[in-house]
Amino acid sequence: MIDSRTIENPDTVTRTTFRDADQEAAFQRDGYVVVDFATPEIVEALLESYTRLNSGIDSGYYPSLMSPDQEYKAAANEEVGAIVWPLLNGLIEGYEPLVGYFMVKHPGPDTEVSPHQDWILADESAHSTMGVWLALTEVTEQVGQMKVLPGSHKWLTGLRGSPGFPMEWEAEHERVRDELMVTVPIQVGQAMVYDIRVLHGTAPNRSQSTRVIGSLYALAEGSTPIHFYKSPEGIVQGYEIADDFYTTFMIGDVPPGEPFVEIEDYSVEQLSFDEIASRYAASRS
Image 1 (tube, rainbow, N blue to C red):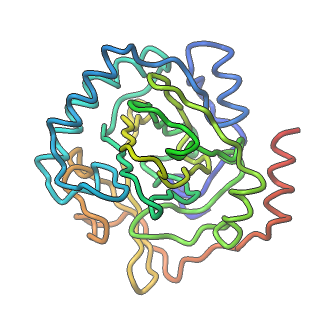
Image 2: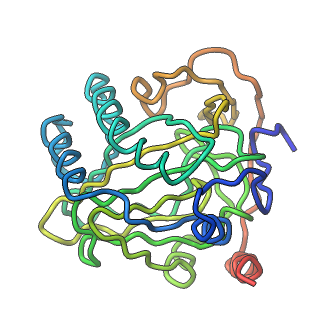
């Protein structure tokens, strides 16, 4: 173990997350649940924010956090967080919001979001970090539905950060996507609430309309936000980050401050498809 905030991935977390027992059981088993999350009025309010807060990006896929416009990112965080966090807080306990944002996918064949795990945002050795994926527009097969590898939050390991890290599943990600990952239907107003370690991704948007998602990350109360950075030379550093990090940071930037850990020549063992399939099957039994 390099550090308790890095690669530990216990079979279960030690704190109950969901207030509802059935949702908690499904979350512990699968790493996600789909819930009726927002009323039509709330969806409309978030879409109004999305339209008014112009990102200046009119093609491809982007999360608002990737915009170079810091004022836009800060405004999106404030408005999405103010609406989404109270709804999430009604479902889970012992958490606090980190950042809110939009995920936008304009039509285009190059808009696939390949299977991935979200960045490490805090210590995961004891508590899950939570994500919300709230459909504000239709998410049909043509638009590109969510796919997830259920239970993968319990056995996938390794560091995750910017600008890119080697992942133990990446050599087989296409077979994993096509043969193991399951489609998760999500209607407008519904949200997938998930452990950000779970492997997930979406197909390209082959429709004629823009897909808009409202998203938020939440950390266990009292957690210190962290970020891992991998240099072009292969050196990995972990940083404790400020509250405004995600509204000021651009991928490729070195986080400010002194790292709490530094790892030279970081690498992970690449799993074969059979190894991934075996671990997946074991997690479902």
